[in-house]
Structure formats: structure tokens, C-alpha cells
Image 1 (cartoon, rainbow over the protein chains, first blue to last red):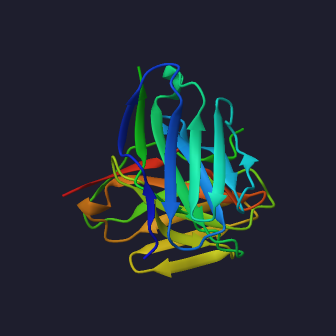
Image 2 (cartoon, rainbow over the protein chains, first blue to last red):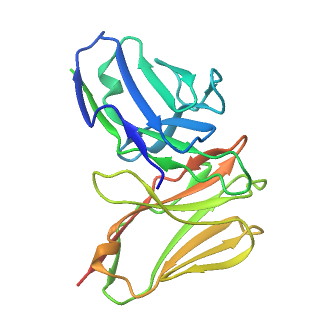
Length: 114
Length: 110
């Protein structure tokens, strides 16, 4: 069974804090992704990585950065948290073979920025 | 125009009925299509993927793809209250990225 884990289920931070969200997968997947999910807006891609030390911007990268030093771990960093970054953050991983680029999701981190 | 469009619902069906969920997409070059189910407060889980025109069946679920008309649908036969969830359509675009629709909420009443 594929397992994607995220470091926290719930997180409360203050405006201006630096926030780290960690994601670990155990299936040796090349691809890893960070999304945020907001009511009415669906899942939006923040960043993704298709290899160690590689990263690509998604649709909404502003205010975020990522790090992938090891294949199994993909971190999302909020450099200076703001209230509009209050959201559900979902990590996913997936293999690189075509045509099935299925993504497996972690349980999510609900982040509240006060 | 959004890349992937779904009716937000809710779609209400009685137990035992067929639920039909629809999705349209804008990128004609898209090759692979996914249906995810998401229960409230949980993360999405894959139900099916399809990449050939026509129907693909898996138990009570059937995915239908029509690339000429750029739509993909999911049929759920013999709907159960436990099928009540939000169903997300996703399309592979670019380099192995998924673009998600905003989801259709399905309510199955006993």
C-alpha cells in the first residue's frame, strides 16, 4: 500500500512566521506535489518536483518555496505566513510512467494563520 | 474558460439509482483522465482512470471518455449512501501535472 504522510494534521501559526510542512512517501515515486484546497476553488497546484533537487512552479507559487533533498521527502515552506494562506494543504506523490500518472494523496494539513 | 469544469451540485439521487457525474476539459491534447472521490475532511482517493475513448468499468463504477467532445463522465450504479462524497475530475496536462475540477457533490439518500 502506498503511504504518503504529512507532518501535521492541524497547524496554527501567526502572521509573519516561517512555516514548514513536511511530506514523506514510501513508494519510491519520482513525482511529488503540493496543493492547497479551498472551498469553491478546488485543488490548486503550488509546486511540484519530478526528481531530487528539482522543482517546478505550479499555478500559485507566490509566497511559497519548496525543498526536495531526498527522493522520499518534499517540504513546503511559507516564508512569511499570511492570513490568506489559511487553507488545507495536500501533498501527493506519483510514478512517472505514462499514461497512468496517478497521484496518491497524504491526509492533509489544515493550516490556520492568525 | 476553466481547464476542467464540473457542476458543483449537489447531485441528489435515491439509493439504488444511477448517479451520473460529468466533466468537460479544454485542452484537446489531454491524454489521461482521473476520477477521485473525496469524503468530507479527508484527502482525495482514486476511483478510476481512463485514457481510451469509450467506457471502462470497475465494479459499480463506469468511466466514459469522449475526446472529440472533450468530456469525461463517471456513472455509479446502485448508488449507496456511502457514495455520498465530492467527486473530482482530473486531467493530465503538460508534464505529468494534474489539473482538477472543483468537484461535484453527490448526495445519496436512503
